[in-house]
Image (cartoon, rainbow, N blue to C red):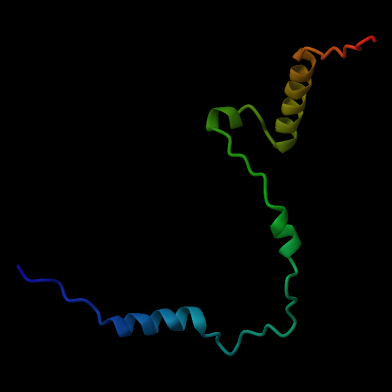
Length: 89
């Protein structure tokens, strides 16, 4: 059985360099603003993926938020309230 021929490493490296390092002349970044979206990026994201059967019950994000608020309120009310004991001298 013959071994498959590979492309020379230098040829692959040249192709990868061209794709990542060279900017074509018709791209104009002179009006670009450095760091324009960095603050928004640093805030992160809070994306939650719902299972399909759960997503069918909620038509939009507002419905999900309403349901979660009701659930959170019910959980808060179900918690036993802490009693503050005062020590007497």
